[in-house]
Amino acid sequence: MTQIPLARRSPIPPESCNLASAIEVVGDRWTLLILRAALYGVRRFDDFQAELKCPRTVLSGRLKGLVDAGLLVKRPYKAPGKRARPEYTLSAMGLSLRPILIGLTQWGDAWLASGESPPISFTKGGTKAAIRAAFVDADGREVRPDQIRTVLRG
Amino acid sequence: MTQIPLARRSPIPPESCNLASAIEVVGDRWTLLILRAALYGVRRFDDFQAELKCPRTVLSGRLKGLVDAGLLVKRPYKAPGKRARPEYTLSAMGLSLRPILIGLTQWGDAWLASGESPPISFTKGGTKAAIRAAFVDADGREVRPDQIRTVLRG
DNA sequence: GGTCTGGATTTAGAAAGCGAACCCATACAA
DNA sequence: TTGTATGGGTTCGCTTTCTAAATCCAGACC
Image 1 (tube, rainbow over the protein chains, first blue to last red):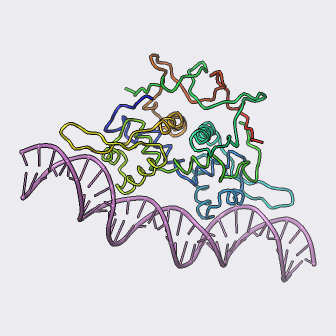
Image 2: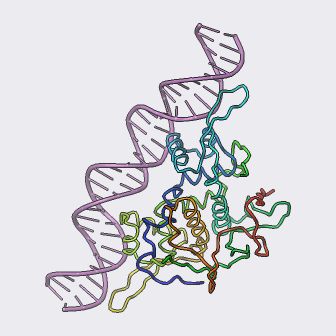
Image 3: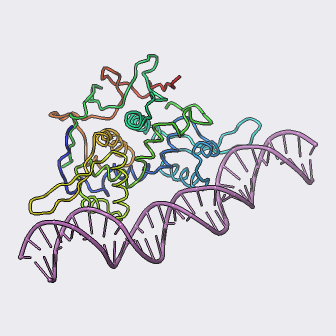
């Protein structure tokens, strides 16, 4: 296992780090659980609430925050014979978190699973070939984790 | 953009979902910021504190939690002429989160950056070729996001 | 023996989380 | 037109967690 060299501080101060900024936006239990549900197709307030079993105050606050941050889009929908209501769907910004959450799912499968095989897996469309989160170069060829180098600007 | 089909509930209840379990473990602002620092090489209590500017109570609680969860290993180190103190290094379980946090970094670069070019980037060892988070099949060849299919067990 | 230093815990006030109850607008039924 | 059901919230108290500052503690060094 590659040991990370000791550092007293990170090379980028958190205030100007896009990872730290991303953590400010999505680094929250309920926020992540909302995004998980949204990626599975949940869109409506009461459906989120039934799924998450969280206080409605928290849910409405988090949904508002995600809309403000640009991850969710709030717009009315109209079921026939019903009145118009808002629904929350993922924007392109929100959808682009999918690889990360799938990666986290597979991390959980690897380290947290309780014995059984994973309840959900991912394949390439049409085939049964399993896929996994990884890094690729410009040509789409895998780069193994120990080959990754970090480069600072300037 | 591929619209996700409407669902009233997620296909896997959160209680038995490894993604939800993973969120319970790492879905916390301070926890994620600690892991970020650890991946940059920070190991010691006071260094984490200087980096994160978080209350020491919170830091010691989170470090304990991460050790209990198996992401960090606590062991003594001894600087010459100093007494032995604990340091916190990433276990294999913690290290394997690196691709996910790199992915989140790049998501932040894409969506949250304030104009400038990213302060940190990632390349394949030895070369200057940029890399990115993606999905690959068993042979290490990229699978595009729209080709990803989810498969439920059973 | 006194002091410094890294790694914490204690304490008390502020913020956030929580569950239950309530509110409100619309559709549809009586 | 009064009533009821329903989805999408807000209001209200209470409890937990967070936060900041102070304190504690053990070993190295003078």
